[in-house]
Image (cartoon, rainbow, N blue to C red; front, side):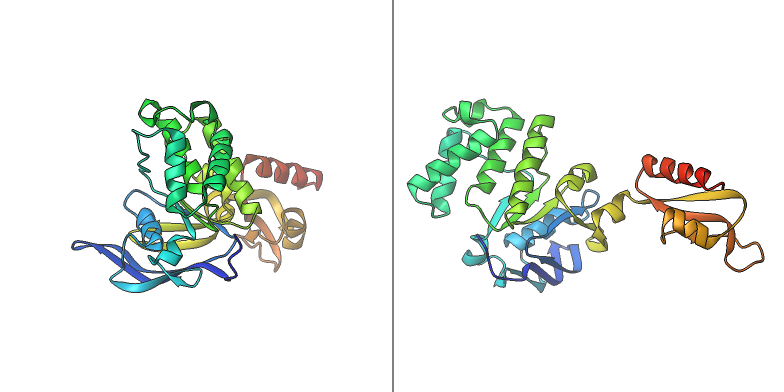
Length: 288
């Protein structure tokens, strides 16, 4: 599966229109090989369109897209992608196994490998018992599990997943997280579009925040989405060096008491209530 390219995906000044409506406005980003990135944003922000330009089903009127150095949309580039659209569209008149084997044939897998991988993935997603049942009898969650299994079948180095937990119950979501983490450990690149930052947190290190067709911010998901600043006011002024030793260099003094390096109020970045409680406890022990 290893593809010897430093960049899995490169987006250069990508602009896309649907009719007269501009949906992507000069998007620039590089996804490193082996990285895991969540694309977050409201409905209509452009998340799905970014994925579709990488697959090559949407063509920018300006800019360029490369997949492991290949032009997006070419046969060679498509062979490197496992794509789960928001509405996957499994073949309902076929059985689950027939869906898998048909997809395997499209991807050039030999019959023995196709059957082995198909059954292994159906087992992993809890569908082995219904492998020979027609898909029209499946629930929405079962169809989503089948679509996810199909996406992983050819063992592609790049996974593009659009709302992968849609319709899944907690067990299905947990299975998906486990399998995606396994793929990341094996060196796959993951780009997931989702409304759910808590799911994204479980499978992605990095994040893009998209709004109005543009990337508004990018960086580590934990810092972009979950980190918050709290303001702490002390009963007396304290040397800022003491505060830094207690809460780290991320603290920001807000007030001065007329003496350089002394403050009675500061802000600090935290990631939840437990960190706040720990800061309060440490300051109490220090007599503040």
